[in-house]
Amino acid sequence: MAAIIVAGFLPPAWPDGAQDPLRAIGAVIAVAGLAFAVWAARSLGSALTPFPKPLGTGLVTRGPFAIVRHPIYTGGLAFFAGYALFRSAPALVLTVVLGLLWVGKIGVEERLLASAYDGYAAYCRRVRSRLIPFIY
Image (tube, rainbow, N blue to C red):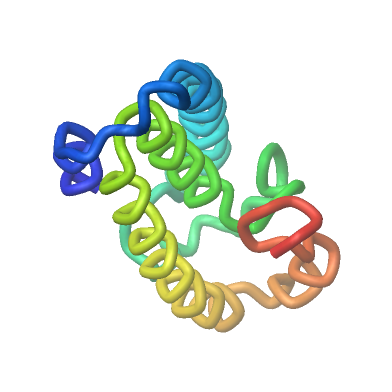
């Protein structure tokens, strides 16, 4: 994540004609992503952890978790994608790499959640999207 921030200051920058529209779009996406991630973190409350293993405080299915199963990752990726659009192409490339890493982490988390919570399979049937509503 820090590498994405640093890469935003590295060349090449976006072409001059595209810079202003990309900055505007990027700012909106980044703010929306940050807000979505904060909403998800607040919904998790004491269950929030950076580690894949659940804390055993109960399965959270309300708020943004009723839309996607991993809304903190959704918001984080939107934030970094928006930041990259605002700053530079190298940051966008690293955001794609981060997304691939997080998809791998999601696979681990889902196995751990399924073993920790009996209702997780039913939750997955109800909320089919992992990251992007109605898509993945």
